[in-house]
Amino acid sequence: MARPAAVSPCPSCGDLAGRGYPACRFCAELVDQYWLLDWQELLAAEQLAEGGAGERELAELVLADEVGRHPWTCTDWAMTLLACSQCGDELATGPADCVRCAMADGLRWSWDHAGHPTAITAGEHALRTARATVRAPHRHRAATVGAWRLLLPFLLVGELPTAGQVRRLRAAVLAGAYAELAGCATYVELTSFPELPWRRPARPARPDHRPRTHLDQPVVAADAVEDAPRPGPGEPAADPV
Ligand SMILES: [Zn+2]
Ligand SMILES: [Zn+2]
Ligand SMILES: [Zn+2]
Image (cartoon, rainbow, N blue to C red; front, side, top):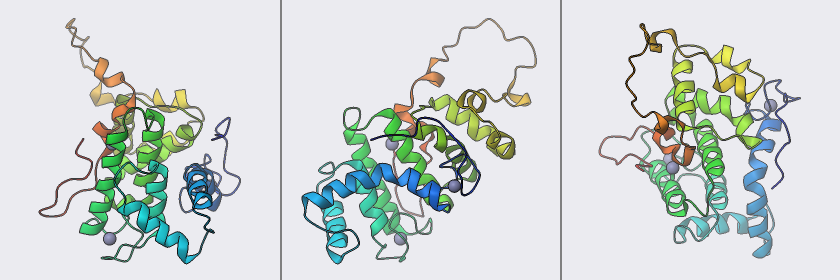
């Protein structure tokens, strides 16, 4: 699907396009079109119209189907169309202690992991994580939400953060640098944001050669930083990787 060629300010909210997701309509459309196109294809194949009762039934069928039968985008969109039978919110976006939402979210990621690495690319995985996180911010730590929100406009144009970059962004957001980071106009600027002072070695680093390559592997495992919703008592954490 066609992605925007470059990151630019959203004409509606003024932030980098995508960052206002999902409150800003323009940002929401820009992000969601990636999912919606696949869903519309499925609707067409089933000869169903958007918005009808048939669409909701299809969404229920998609989620009831064996994991991996449908594209991950369609699984996500089906969840967006359905209300949680327990809490009444959009499925998987309810309060952190809603068991049914947690289960739906967990199932979504089990497909993602079953689909690695052929059915979902690392870039798609990052995009999927970002959307799910900013769509249900109360289910994640604030710094994680901030990091994915900062990254979202760049994910839309195909940038792929390393797990280390996401972790560093999270740390910077945690340290209160969100507003400053939000002012970065380019991906390079955002991801090369100065490390926090207390994380810099006080003395010249000893010449030990601890391998640090794991910090810069592509985010096939955004999982390391996916920060599954805090599970309620007695529930397994979602997306255990
Ligand atoms: Zn916007
Ligand atoms: Zn719920
Ligand atoms: Zn994952």
